[in-house]
Length: 352
Image (tube, rainbow, N blue to C red; front, side):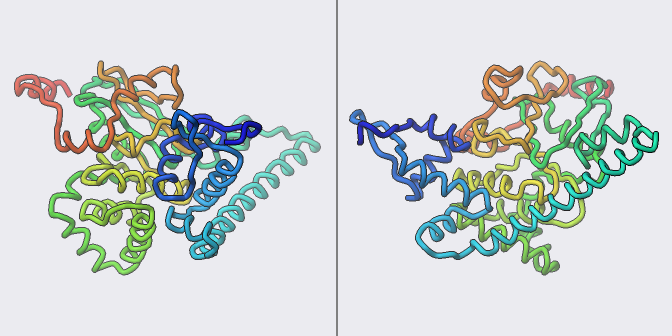
């Protein structure tokens, strides 16, 4: 190890690159990057390793799977043309939106020169989110009718809370209250994927989208399974602008969860807005939360659900962290639900 070169530990390297240390470890496991080792055996990232990792991060941002990244870094352009074409389409869409906003500003300035000032609503729409929906409704049991408001709905929204916190009820209520939304429940797993396969057989367009998504996920390390097929059939369906998904990790192993998390992030704002119920640290990686993601916590004490900022010290952050578990731990508690005595359940129904 050169004494003059600046070597970073995994946490420092991840921070510089804008990814999580877990992502760096995954790159290493796939043979994409090989950090040096200190005399004590600790991983260390020097200039060459950081440059290589930066290339990987950039290719991932274009939507390439880890296998495609490996091929590109090895000299093969396989998958790069499609990724660049998609990126170009995204940039052109953004350019059209910016051009439209510039036209609005130009019109406002013309109006001002003529003595006509824009109203507050026009100015708010100009500087605020262009098409972000918002929702407000009275919360169901166990919150007892308290008001819930959510603005700036982002492409990825995570719903999390301990057992018995009411997160499933919140998810169902969101699916009912949000415009053009649907709920994808655990009944998707009831028949071992038979219903999903029947849907794909009857809908060639859906089948094509699912096959493309599945190929990307398998390329990224996911294992093909009935649970993954059923989930993709729901995620890739046409129709609802917003999808609320019950326990997205159910039935998926760790590698599949990691690949799915990367896939959903790569979809970003190109796909429908998603509300994902989860308690898996592979799905909700607190170190990798981006600007297009929101965490909604249902507290254990049945305080109203709240948004939580993804950094240590933020209100609710520690509560979110304690709700998350590794895929191995989650697999041991699959299907576990909170239990309430029958008498109390009856009382809650009467008071709902």
